[in-house]
Length: 264
Image 1 (tube, rainbow, N blue to C red):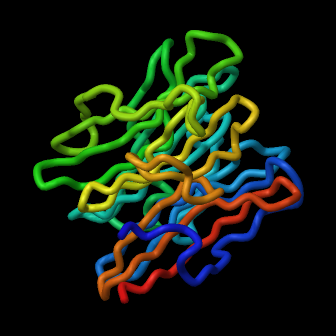
Image 2: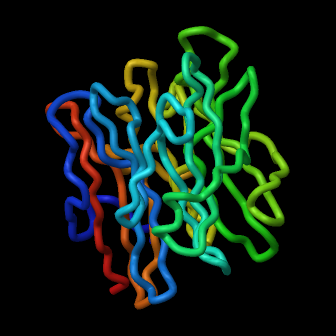
C-alpha cells in the first residue's frame, strides 16, 4: 500500500516564516546521504519577498544570486561525486520559469557552485518544480509545465517526462499527466513524487482560484488523498517511509511537515 499523509507520526520540520497569506515554508525535496541520514531542501518565502530562498542542509541560496524573481521547488540528488541541486527560477517581469542545476562535492559547497541551465523553457512554456531521480541507465525527470499562450491563465499546469544520460542534457519525452475536465484536478496536475515501484503522487486543483492550495492524489486514483501540496516520499534504509509536504494553516501561511510511517 502506498504511504499517505495522515497515516504516520507528524512533525513540523520548518514553521511558517510569518503569519498570513504568502508566508510559506515548503516545496521540499529529500535525499539520503552516504550514512543514510536524511538531507532536506526546501523553499522559504514571505509576503514581501516572493520565493526568497532555497535552504539545504544549512546552506541558504537566495534568488538574487540566480537573477530570479522567485525560487520554487528544488530537487536534491546525491551523485557519485557529491550532490546535485536543481532549482526552479522565475524570469523577472514575466510568467516564465526555467530550471538550473548546481553540482558540488559537498553540501556546503553548493553555496558557491556555478549554475547550469538544464531546462530553459521557452516563449510558450515555463518549466519548474522538477522531480529528478537516478535510473538504471541514466536519469529521469518529471517537469511541471505552465503554458504561456493565454495572458492571465499561466497557472494552468501539466507534467512532462524527460530522460538523460548525465542529468544535464535532457531528451524531452512529452506530456505524461494533465488535468481531467470536470474533476478535482481539472486546472492542472503536477507530479511530486515517484516511488521505485512506479507509484506516482501528484497535486492539482480544479480552478484558478485554488492556486497555491493544491491537493494531493495518486495517479490512477479518483479523488485527492490529502489537503497538502508538494509531497515528497523517501524510502528509509531500515524500512518504512518519511513523507515531507507543505501544509496550509488557517491564516493562509504554510508550514513544512514530515511524517514517519513504519513498515509494520
